[in-house]
Image (cartoon, rainbow, N blue to C red; front, side, top):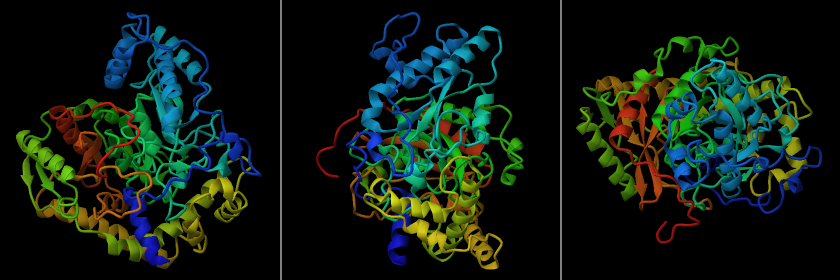
Length: 566
């Protein structure tokens, strides 16, 4: 069992090898998947009303040109349009609702549409007419992952029917920050149920509440996980920007296979209060966007110190005051960038080709490229120390969240396990809850000496793995392929590609992926920038410079399959 679990946890954290899809709730209306002691699921995300499609004011009708412009426009450009009275937040919000209605039946990326979204947009327009602009996201529709609390008419479920009647008493801190910045909370995105921490056999992007999320580039390819819905929604232009969360790879892997920019911030940059946890020692929220500009703007909007999350004590001063400081096309000039190849090249020829081209581009942009900056593999640390620590943390943190959240739902992990057994047809049609059961057997005591020893050893080893390479080669950052091309959703074969995310996750360090190219001219590939604690702004500037010099991203084609070799 332990050997199987460790192999599968590697798959869970890397999110590249995915098990067979469970389609039980995909072939019937959501109401048919209602558990015996739960409510009917929230209204379908495609029920957005009958308002007229959005079109720019100077055109008066919708056409493909506007869809293309919406795909390419940055938040800054949308703000200029609203400032210039060429666009309203209501029109923009309706445009995204129309796209959700049109595309989401194929993608299952959005699990809930906020029934108050258009009212929020109208309020934004009224404020703008009076000269009041609350912040840089004024009137901008944002989708958030379905493990982030909102105190509105939307449930927060982590993809589980057990939480359909959960009613958080207040917004998550990051949602409060989004609202303060003027954002329109458009809805919630699908995710791997319980953020891929229920079973070793879990399918990336599947949840009982939302079904199987589909990769918009090739629909039968994995969207990776667990922030699959957020990445797919960003790629398919279902919102201006989306928010995901990451424990290990859950932002950067989905972003890399959907040609989006994914930002996993330093632990403590963004508050976790009001976010359904796996472990407070890894978990963080972060933006996913079609360009680095929007990702940076969103990160600036949601970061900040929160008295309810002690890890954020330094967050207010962890970034420059103005996000535009990182939007420097010359940011790589004179920087020393280490190249991490071991365990990542020689596996897939398209990955090698795209990564070599990115490294050459870094040189052309003035960086000193340092070969041999390989980060040590972390398999031994995961088995010996990380897994015991995370299982204990999961029980402790999830029990605290469930006990504090209002509504008729399981109040601890033991009750949640029992709920899943009673509703196994809906919740466990293809995989079980082995990780839940393992975690429930721990004492959940995060003050116990044995636990503290495991956590200290895991964190120390992960930090040394990254900081040691940075110091040895006097580097500003490390660059490496994020992952391999998305496999088929049903793929069973493991990949020898070593995790590019685990050390950053366990260390609490930032990791940013940016689109770099395509396999077979179709499947997106990303490259990652890694650094030490609070190097987020620098990494974003390097990603921005590479993106500006190599604008490779193209809109999804929604191909049903990709014929030929896998």
